[in-house]
Image (cartoon, rainbow, N blue to C red; front, side, top):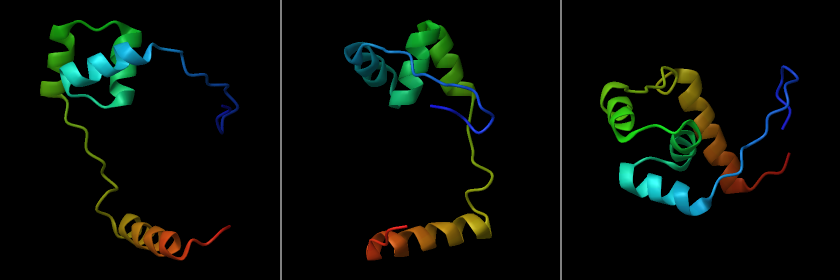
Length: 82
């Protein structure tokens, strides 16, 4: 995949079973599990990351974001094609 800045990004192939195991054992989502697997984090590092980092989206409650969500819902209900 090519980004807006022109960089070519590729996803590293991982074993689906290992990703699922990490996901279940550590209560992570798939992307987090792939990062843990690719960076070879220890159990202590995973615990520290989960317990000390709280990720918040500052734009989630803004007027524009909420309006965009409503617009997306309307579009999906009507199945409008662009």
